[in-house]
Length: 82
Figure (cartoon, one colour):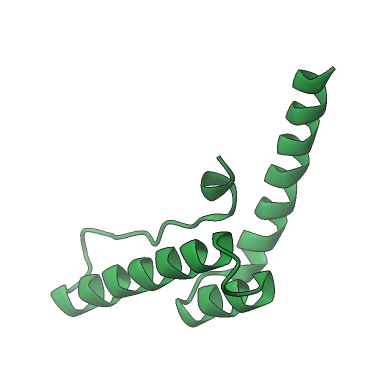
């Protein structure tokens, strides 16, 4: 479940060239590998965020969304745990 909260999807658009699509797919793979390494404790969360930045993830959008999702997850866990 945490994977879906902190993971990212690199969007593809119809007007992209084959080279742009190939780059996006490589970025998606790198972000996924970074996420898996973080979840296994092989890298820190800061290192995971660095990977996302290298993959051109818009951190100004990602971080606030992540914070919001984590707060919702915490509230859900508290509700279910009650």
